[in-house]
Image 1 (cartoon, one colour):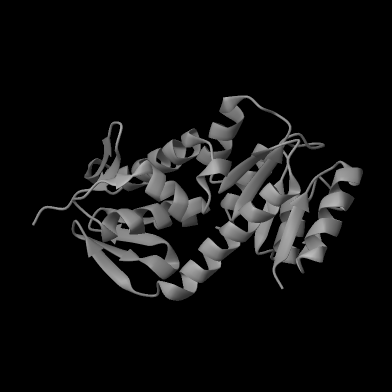
Image 2: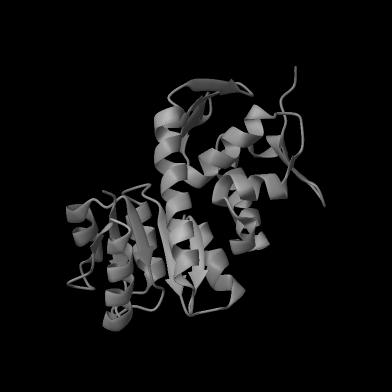
Length: 227
C-alpha cells in the first residue's frame, strides 16, 4: 500500500480527497501542525506528497523546497492559483506535476497512478549504469558523475535523460516525452515539459554537460554524443 502525505489545510477538501484515495487502497496522512510539516514528512516517510500552495505559516513552495533538500519523493502540487508562474515555480523547485483546482478526481487519480508507476517501477527496472559523454549515469541512484563532480537529479530529470540517451543523436518529440512521463498528454501543460527539460539542462551544466541536451525548435529534444 502506497503512503500519501496530503498537505492541505481545507479540512473539507482533505477529507474528500482522503476518502476517495482510500477507496483506491492508498494510505493517506494529513498534517497535524503546519509549522512542523518537514518533521511530519520525515516521520511518515510517504511514497508521494500532494501539497497546496496556500497554507498556514509557510506556503507550499517553502515546504517543497524543504522536502526536496531531504528527499527525492515525488511531489504533486494541487492549487487553486492559476498563474503560469506558480506552475513554473513548482517545477523549478522539483515538483513532478501540478493540478489546478477545481479538478476532476479522475484526473487526480490518473496523475497519482502515473507518477507512482513511473517512479517506483522505473527504480526497480533501471538498476544498470550507463556511460554518456564521459559521464557515469547511475539510474537507480539518480546520480550523474564525471571528472567535474557529481550531481543528483530528480526522478523526472533522470527519466527524461534516460529517454534521450536511449535515443541519443536522434530527436525525441515533445509528444513522446510527455506520453512517457505522464501517460496522457491531455492532462499536461506543454510548459510543464519545457520547465523539466530546462531544469535537467541546468543541473547538467554544473558538471559541464548542459550543452549536450539540445532543443530542436518545433520538434523536440536530443541528447548529443560524439562517436
